[in-house]
Image (cartoon, rainbow over all chains, first blue to last red):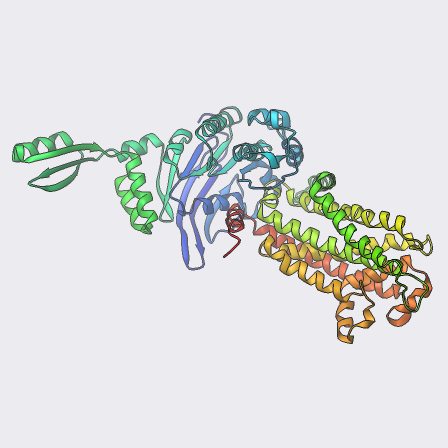
Length: 310
Length: 291
């Protein structure tokens, strides 16, 4: 992304550890996010994505490690720091009697003392309603909203303070495809127009590829991949899987040069080789394999296997 | 404020003002909500209905009828009930549904949130009082012995707020879920209502029960209200044959002081624990009532 602001990274995480009781959720997470980047924290459910993002938001105390977000430690951050961040929360049934206009006026009001010429705070309510497409519902009680409308309001409340850094935890969970597309537009707009740095979590690889400049894959309590989606895809695709049958037996072989291998195979066995299949592994394959072993409780093993592929 | 301090005073004051606006908005929304209107009317209907059915019952030892003696006691009970259960439910619900977390995510949002809670629950006693007082004054005679009693009503109301609101907030902060407010809030308040001399004179109860009742604000709110509405001669019905005004102020004042000391720490503890995953867990739990 273009507009790098002067100064260090927006987020810096070193050897972050989290332990609940005797269960280690994070065992040494390291990553950095620069100004203006959109970074996606991807991983199977239960991999610790929410824990990580809540530590960065300052909503959860970490067990160990160094975390710096916008030059401060989020666990001891000031309200002025809070004013520079935005959190998109998943609403459920809060503020049922309020209307979006009144609620955004109220929530935005808290940011007013922190506005600057460069970043006027809060975003005017009408502008915000327009951005998230709630203008027509602006004066309706929130209790009457559908799930998708509520989520748009969640996004509006997350960005009402014109944040420099925005956190989104599973932002499109429960969205229909149309809502999801609109949301992706909105994210691009935020980064392009406002230079907002965004950290979002998802378990959906497709979403990570669409939105993120960089994908961090969290598994087995640490980051197992940290790169652009394209480069991760390329790396995962180096090996080609060759499958065939001979004399009723099934064979699989992974190779980097499929052409040469198949040549040799046919030279040796000729017509005995049947059901030949040559397939380039995709990032999706590697990720799905990771998710699958994670869900069957073999998260460490899965993380290691994934690191080998990538 | 000294320079270099991490919290400039203006954003905090600003947040308090926003919180007052928030509380007022919630109060107006509550007045317009049929759910809350029904609650006010229903409690008033029960209270006034009880008084009406017993309008001809004389009170032994006085020349008064039951409504004159029971109305102030019921007002005291309703105050304590509303000021404990109201905030307890609000807090318990709003830490589950994410309202509190939203407040935490904006700068000084918690200051605004709690200021709003104070305004909302303080204002809420007005419709509750009005709903009981207006029909009572229309139906019954001789409720207020001396107009100067309204002054006493005013200071008892202020002490009621200071003494019982913190109890409600503490319950709301401590209960693990809104479903548990019934057990930890409603039940004790109902028990206290039973032993606090609201429906029958307290000296009809065993001595140790009288002692327990006098430890809590509800009895004193009822006593304070009776001292406001009834003629001085009616003090003969009370413990010690006196309105015990000084004791009333001391006991309610002590609760107010303890509340002011303890509750901010409890609220901070509650707010510190708020996170998205806690709200998500509460959402899961709420859809699973039977465990």
